Amino acid sequence: MSAIVLKLTGEAARKAACRHVLAAPEGYVFRLGEPAKKREQEEKYHAMVGDIAKQCTFLGKKLALDDWKRLLVDAFAKVMRDAGTPLHHDGRVVPSLDFERVVQLGIQTREFRVKEAAEFIEYLFAYGADSGVVWSDQKKYKFI
Image (cartoon, rainbow, N blue to C red; front, side):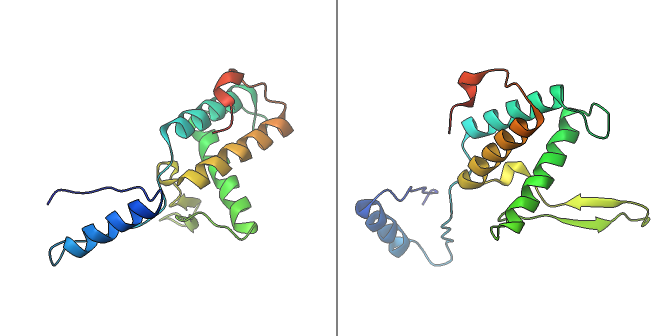
């Protein structure tokens, strides 16, 4: 039996999922979860981070796109924790191996779910508005 992926869209899909589970051989694994983010969401938030990186400074300096992405994802994760809705794969800060710095572990945008990616995009809009960012392509930034 090859892998089967079903999106629960209604009663018929739920019944089909049940039939597949009941027919599966002993030892098979069944996973049920939220959908992963959409490619369009990923493209959108990467473009938005790019606009922020081009137009904003941190501590008086321009930062690389990857540095901005880490800062923005960390700030977004804190906002989500403070709201009582932490990311499903929330990160943590630990001391470096030599105990001279701190290191952020665990948060990866590639693991965002659809809802988390949508909320990250909304966070970026708010951050950009507060920072005076002019979005490079308004058509790209329609709500996803």
